[in-house]
Length: 158
Image 1 (tube, one colour):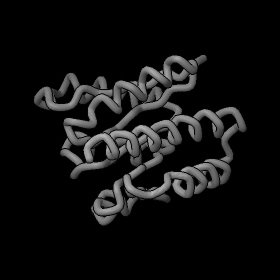
Image 2 (tube, one colour):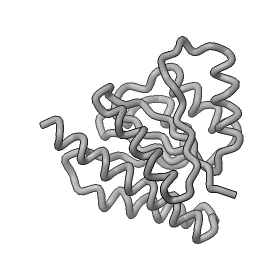
Image 3 (cartoon, helix red, strand yellow):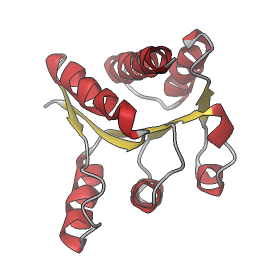
């Protein structure tokens, strides 16, 4: 069975390609990544689909580079309430959001800094979660890819 990841994201519209690129890279490595469609009115049927995807996920990867929308906040609250492993990767200037206080660990990054220290912090966090070595490596590689893509997108904007 494939490792399943739910991607909760709050990205600048110019960075949306990051979510789809990360999903493609994950699929190429046998990881099933669910990327919800944000902005379609938040219909109840959509919420049920998102909740089912979170329920099936082995972990939730949250990438937040802009203020978290109501939908993202709902996704993350739901994941927390259902005791999912959530890895929030948040741009440094957004780390004070009250929603993030509920997570055991929040990983902050600046698009202008070396992502290596954040990657190391995530790997250490994963080791503490008592995951199998394969799952640690899978999530670690996926988060490293996400951080790398964030840096590339930031450099491209400048």
